Image (cartoon, rainbow, N blue to C red; front, side, top):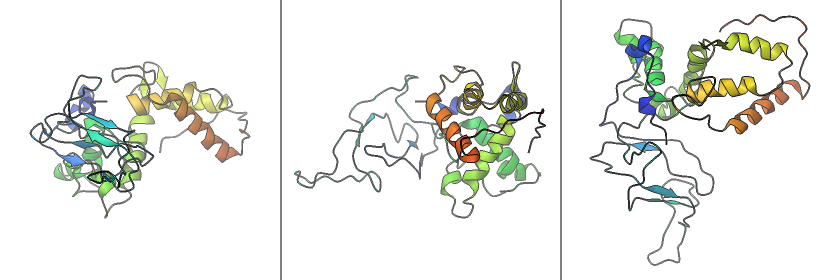
Length: 254
């Protein structure tokens, strides 16, 4: 597992990040539903969850003939699996609790971590309003309720707004150790949009915060799947025939 509460901002942007509230308790409103898919992510203080175990994805939970009968009741549409909290099971960081672990990914680009939620709140949410700055969502505190991105019935667009904000604020502006997003985008397009180095680097920025993982947060997750999906989108856009760019292009930030 990943400790998203440790995804901090740089020193220059530290004032934007969300504080970690150890008493925050949240259960996700969205989750996967394939056969044996785990239940919704959740977090809470150690007084509520002293430890957590594992999700047994192979467990056959729909057993009406059992005594007593069993049903798949963790979430609607569940087909298999169950929580096994009979003993603590540590994640890769050695933790067995979920205290402060409320900053998992949400929205179309999976906004995650105290830094990204803090920036969203600083520029678009309650923090901006409290500071006397213009705010698109002045009544929404993304730091106190990160799940609002998925749960809001009033602002259903938040799933997209959060992703677009992250792309504009963190991806398009990325320029670290000689790797500049806009420069690399030009090179990729002018080079015929071949190879995986560009999408791998962008995937690293989105997934791990760096263009050349492993970095501080680990290896790039799902490298091949991300590359395959990117190429599927290119095929959908161009019908399998990548256009040739014969002159340097100009890229502007939006």
